[in-house]
Image (cartoon, rainbow, N blue to C red; front, side, top):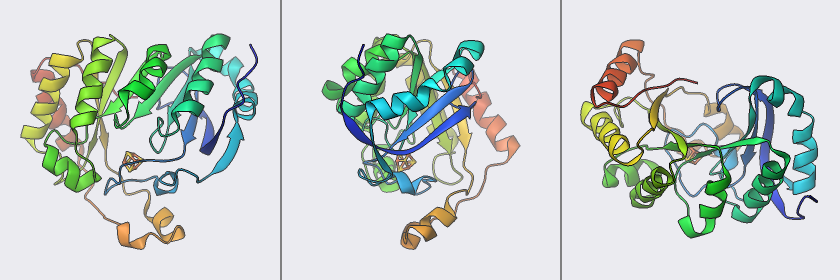
Length: 248
Ligand code: SF4
C-alpha cells in the first residue's frame, strides 16, 4: 500500500521508548493540544503548527528504521502529544499505514477529542493510554482549561470497544492526589473500562526550562513531587476498588 499524502506537524519522534507501551517503541509526538494543564512538561507541543511539517511518507521512512526492534521486543509505535488527536486526518493516515504494515500501535491521549472524528482511528489501535486528570469537572477546568465531560464520555466509549486501555492519573500534590479523587477515578474505571488498569504518573518538575525558552514564563507553576509513600497509598486505594495498577 502507498503511504497517503497527508502532511502534519510533528513535535518530535523518539526511538527506543520503553515507558509508552509494550516492548521497544517509537513515540511520535504530534503537535497541538487543546488543554493547558498547569503542570504540563511539554509546552512546546501546544502550538498546532509547531515542530516540523512532515508527510506520512517521511514519518513512515523514519519509523521503518526501527521495525527490527519492534519485531524483537513486541513493540510498535505510540502516538503522543500534545494531544495525539489534534490532527485527526494526519493521525488517521499514519495509523492506516502502520496497520497495513502489521506494526502495533498505541496512543496516549488526554481524551479530549471529537469521537466522531477519531472513532475509526481508535478502532484500529491496539492499545490506549487515556488520562483522567480530575474527576471533578470544575477542578478539571481550573487546572487544565477544559471541562472533563467529553473526556469521560470518550473513555466510556473506549471501554465499550473493549480496547486494551490504561487510564493514567498525572499525580500532583494538592491538585488531584486526595483520597476522594483517586477513589472516584478507580470507581469510574471499574464501571466503564472493564479490563482497564490505572497507572499513576507522579509529577516531576521537568519542563521549567522549556517554558523559559518559549517565552511562556507566566505559565510556569511548580508543584511538590509526591513521595513513594503517597504514591503507594494511592495505589492501595485503587486496588481496594478492584482495579489493577500498572507501571511502564
Ligand atoms: S494534555 Fe498533555 S500536552 Fe496537553 S497541556 Fe495537558 S499535559 Fe500538556
